[in-house]
Image (cartoon, rainbow, N blue to C red):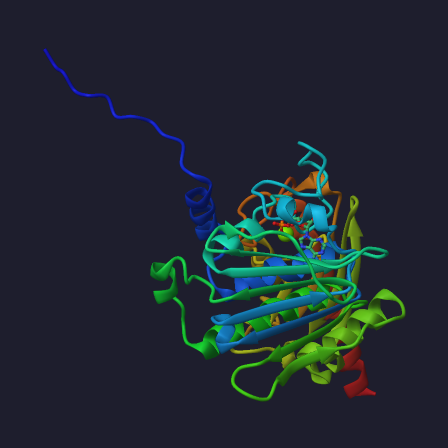
Length: 351
Ligand code: ADP
Ligand code: MG
């Protein structure tokens, strides 16, 4: 007769659940920055300031002038699966960056988090959470909007801390994240500041751009990628069966030795997607050597129901309903623009 004592099944406690989930959402300081800047954009911010120190390992701070959080909602903002961005269960029409309600509780589980916020016409309030332990809501004098500070990321999960790269590499990843989000929001001002040690050093600053889409985007790209890019890029505008493609694609003569300057967005969300990068490669296949890579910033817009952004919390993958259609649109629009530019260049030379 077998007489094993049956193992007891227990519910994990909240702190453990948050720490496990944090492993998914927060891989490194740059992922925390991504979550916080996305929250600021979701809050309708027109100005976003990002500070960090020591590659974001000791300090990350994101300040915005968005709609803020009411004092009595601060504990809820830190609760798992609590979000103001979707209504209950409808995942088919996501227009915001966030919708999982996981970022803030995850950050509070792995570091020392402080949120201070003041909505219009209300008093300011703050809350802290350290290693998953939440403090009380307290009144505080704070500017309109929201400040989120994360200190000592992964102090509560030392194993994760060991996997971080050098301060320099982590700072580069932070700059890349902010740059990508800044490209997607040319009408919002961005400042990225390194506060390591003594004097703050501005990494980049981009004022709010106005004007039509191409003017604003062109100016923002010139700011973030250099005026050279804009002067060597072709404006792209195409549409097929309700899928819109806009942006700028670099001339073949402006290519790079690595595929590290390809900025792709789906419904305003920065993505790294095999299908899209593959389409870009295919479009340039005839005009670039195998070891050269195009520079491009391309924006795809389609009905939210035609793309699933709910694939993974941290990884920037998406799943299109009609991948072939998207790929075909990119390849043909870029080939067409490149052929026209080549044709213009050829006629200029022969004239
Ligand atoms: P999600 O973004 O998926 O909703 P988060 O954990 O990132 O989840 O944020 C939880 C909630 O806190 C948001 O739904 C939002 O209501 C509020 N919030 C977070 N950051 C900000 C901010 N910068 N400004 C205003 N509200 C914010
Ligand atoms: Mg969020």
